[in-house]
Amino acid sequence: MSYNCKLKMDHHRNQDSHDPSKNTIEFTINDVVYKVDDNLTPQTSLNVFIRDHANLRGTKAMCHEGGCGACIITANINDEILAVNSCLVPVIICNGWKITTIEGLGNKKKGYHKIQAVLAEMNGSQCGFCSPGMVMNMYSLFQKNNLTMKEVENSFGGNICRCTGYRSILDGFKGLAIDAEPDLAKKIQDIEELYELKKCPKTDKACNNKCKKLKSHKKSINMKFGNTKFYKTTSINELFSIFNENKNLSYILNGGNTAHGVYRIEKPNMYIDINDINDLHNIKKTNSSLTLGGNVTLTIAKKTFIKFSKDQGFQHLQHMANHVDLIASVPVRNIGTLAGNLMIKHKHHEFPSDLFLMLETAGAELHILNSPLEKNTFNLIDFLKINMKHKIIYSIVIPALKSEHEYRSYKIMPRSQNAHAHVNAGFLVKLNNEGVLLERPNLIFGGIKHDFQHALATEIFLTGKCIFDENVFKEAIKVLDSELKPDHILPDYSPKFRMTLAEGLFYKFKTKFI
Image 1 (tube, rainbow, N blue to C red):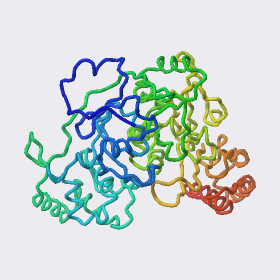
Image 2 (cartoon, rainbow, N blue to C red; image 1 turned 90 degrees about the vertical axis):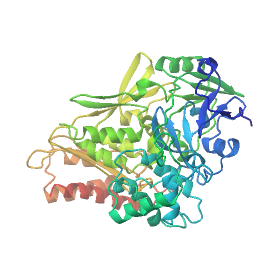
Image 3 (cartoon, helix red, strand yellow; image 1 turned 135 degrees about the horizontal axis):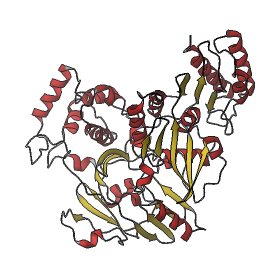
Image 4 (cartoon, rainbow, N blue to C red; image 1 turned 60 degrees about the vertical axis):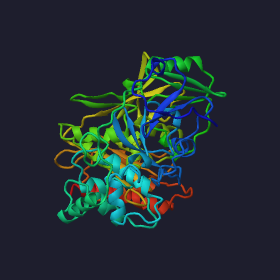
C-alpha cells in the first residue's frame, strides 16, 4: 500500500487542489496535508492510516469496535470539533477533515497542552495505553464553553482504563470545568504554572487550540481502488445518478460507519460517502412535528430534543434526549447517524436499537426516497419489511403529543453507559383524568426476539380500561406474560430473566401514575 508524500501545510494552495474533478482524498493531520490516492485499499481505517502511514503511534488501537476509546482522535469536520473513534472511520470519508492526534496537541519539544499536563500531574496515567484517547476525548469536550463537572463525568463511557482507575483521571479533568471545587481548581492552576505549556502565538497564553479553522471541502469525488468504486456525493440527484449508473453493484452508504463496531461489514463493490448532502442534515420544527434529516447525528439529535423539549406538545423530547444519552458513547454519537442506526435494525432485526424503539413508541414516521422526486412515508414497523436497495432514509418525523399523552422509554444494560440493552422498552398511553386509556397504547419491547416489537395482545386488552385499577393491571401483566416469549441465543441472558425485566419495566411505567 502507498500514499502520496506528506506536504507542509500551504495556506495558498494552487487551483488544482480545488478542481472538482480531482480524484484524491485530502485531509490534514496535525497541520500536515495528506493525500490518499487509489493505491490505498478503501477499507483502510483512519487509525491504520495514522499509525502505519503517517507513522504517528501515539494513537492506539485495541477493540476495533469503538468501545475502548484507545483510538480516539479529534477531528474538525466542517468547523465542528469532535472526538472520533479512528478505528471505525474509513480513511476514504475523511476528505476535508482537520485531524489532531496526541502528538499534535502537545509534546516535549513544543510544550505540552494543559490537559496532558493535568493528566500526568494528577496521577491519571500508569501504563499509558489509554492516555492518548482519554486526553483527546477531553480535548474535544474542552472546546465547549462553560463545561461542567457533570458533563465531564458523563462523557467518558467510551474510554476504558485497566490499571490507573478512573477517579484520578476524572478528578484531573473535572478541575478544568467551570464549577470545579476551589481546591481542585487551585491544583490545576499550580500545574499550569509548573509546566512549560504550549503557548498560543497570538495571546502568549496556554494554547487551547480553539482558533484554527478549516475551509469546507464539499466537493464530489470519483475514484477507483482496483475493482472497487468510491464516490463522494454532495446532492440527492447525484446520489441517484450513481445508483442508476451502477444498478448491479453492491454498495455501502457511508455516514459515520459506526455500524462496523456492531456488525462486520462485507466488502462491497462500491462505497458512497453521503455526509456532505445538505438535504440530509435538515432540521425543521412546526407546531405539529419535528423533522430530522437522515444524516443528523445522534449528538445533534440529542441537542435538538433538549432545545425543543419545553415547547407545547414536545415535552416527550426530554425523555428521548435522556435515552439517547444511553446509546453508545460520545465519540460514536458524534458521527453515528439516525439513518445509519435504523439501517442496522433493518438488516439485523435482532439488534436492540434504542433509537428504533424510541421512535416507534412516539409514533414517528420515515420519509423514504425512491428517487429524487418520489418520497414515500412509512411507519417504523413497515420500514423493516421493505427492500431498501437504491433507496435512502430522507428524514424522520416525530409528531407532537397532546397533554393527555404520557411517554416513557427505559433501558436495562450491563453497565450504566456504552452498552447494548438486555431489554429496552417504550410506552405511550393517552389517558383521561380517571386513568382510562382513550386509544390503543404503544407498548414496545426490544431484546425479546428478532420479530417482537409491539405487545399487541396487551395493547388491545388495555384499550378503554383504567390503568389505575389494580385488577385490570394484574390481568394486563398476565396477558403480557403470555405473549412475551424471549428466544435464547447466546450471549443473551436467559429468557426468564429478560421476561422479568420486560414485565418489571411495564410495572415501573405504571408506578409513575401512583
